[in-house]
Every structure is written in C-alpha cells, then in structure tokens.
Length: 340
Image (tube, rainbow, N blue to C red; front, side, top):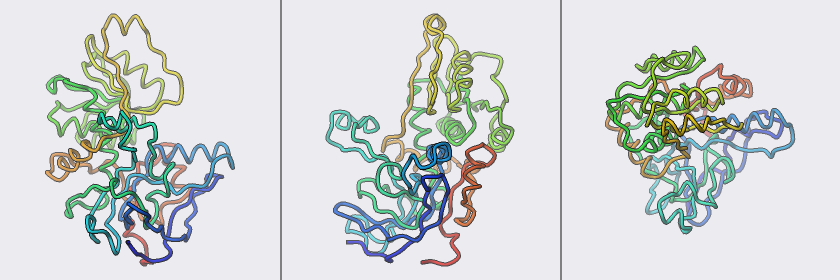
C-alpha cells in the first residue's frame, strides 16, 4: 500500500465559483489504486466550463478539485507494477472494460465512463491524487512535466485527426479555433505529414500563438473550399463557417463541445456529400502515439500553453482564461515555495 504525507495542498472550486487553496487530507489509495504525486496539471476548457457554471449559478453545484490533464510520479511506496518514482501521465477517462463498447475498443463510449476531476475523486490541481492503476501511462523520464501534462489534450487532438479517416495529407486542412484543441490538431496534423494547416480564429492572441508555432492564422475563413476541415471553436458561427468551407466530397470533424443547437443546410450537405463526424476524448492508443511523437521530437507542443506557478492560479486568472484573455495554463507543481 502506498504511503505519503497526511495532508497536502489542493485547489478547491467552491459552489460560488471561487478558487481557494486548501489544506486537505492526502488521498489514501484503495484497492487497485496508486497514489501519484502531481508534477504538473493543465487547466482545460471543461474546467473553465465548470468555473462558468458556478459563477452563473452560485450554490447550484458542489465544490470540486478540478484537473484531468495530469503528469506526475508514483508517490512513496508504489506497487510492484508501479514502483516509486515512475514518471506517468493519467488517462482521466475511466471506463468499465466490460461493456460491449469497451470490448469493441470504443472506451470513450462506455455508459459508465467517469472522468478524473469531474465525477471521479479529486483532480490534478492538487499535490497528490489516487487513481486506478489502469489509468496510469508511463512516459519517458526525459519528458518535462509541463510537456507531459499536455499529452492528454494532444491525445484528444490526435483522436480528432484520426476521425478524419483516409484524408490526403497533401491536400492540407483548415482548423476553426486556435485554442488548445485547435492548435493541438494543427500540431498533430503537421507531425503526421499533412501540409501546413491553416487556423482560423477571431482572437488576435490566439492567432499570434498559432503564427508563433509556424502556422498561417486568419481572422476569417480562407477564400477556397477545403477537403478537410476541423471545428474546434465551440461557437455556432465557427461550425457554420466550417460547414460552408468544406469542399465537395470533403470531411468535417467537430472536435469541440457545443452548448447550442447547430444548423445544418441539408441541401448543401447532400449536394456536396460531406462526411460529417464528431470526435470525443481519446483512446489509449492515442496516448501511446502522442507520447511517441513528442518523445521523438516530431511533435513540439511549445506554445500550446503557458507554464504558471501554483501561486499564480487564482479566481482572477480563471476569469481571464474563461474570457479568452489568457492562454491555456499548465500549473507546475514544483513552483510551490516549500514542499509539504
């Protein structure tokens, strides 16, 4: 059984939407679990959605320790399979492994799916977390923690790229939305040999990040139709423009959550014979492929997020991220003043 310090620090999102640094009992791993000391944890768009819900409806949602983009090392004690000090990332999508969809390899469709930091235990915005051993994935020790924490969102981007099927890499692609998932899709496309993708985003800061990563970034759709289009903005206008831009016989992959109804022109879809598909989460094979791409240097996630100290993570910082005024953040847990 893994042992660790009795108390640790964790960021609690209160029912009113305030982010509070707390001192709590360190999780005690149960049967089949392993305790992980978190070295870096990313703030995801779904975390910001949890934040917005509490700000919009104070008191309507329970407190929560968020964070599912987690890199760490196995804490003191470990297990025979996971010895102390093993560098890992966490696959936050916990599936049953027994249902028909899991047995078919579609684990993201599991009806009993639970997500670390949402509806399973506490998340990675803390010093430690206990997760099933099956959720752990080894990473090379040479991978910096802030980079390892980006494996999960990059795996989601990788899954979206694979959902495009047998698209011709020479034909190029257009990605709507230059946030973490959109820019991640562009990085994966480039790593897999696609012609340099074009990103579309109205936000100057996001366009600047895409340009710095070596991509063409536009404020509006390019003039010519594209055979492969990704919608990663999460905005109805982004979907509309992506649908319109998709060429005859082309493919449109939706890789963002949409909270509103989306309008599809059935005649255009029929006339252009568009292949329209959605992408949800990532499979374990996506994690494996992304780790190999990053470790080999074919995929460089520099610029995908900014690394911040734990003391920089505040309610005000979440407000700025939720408004698009700050880029995605990865919290480097080594930034604590002193260990505890």
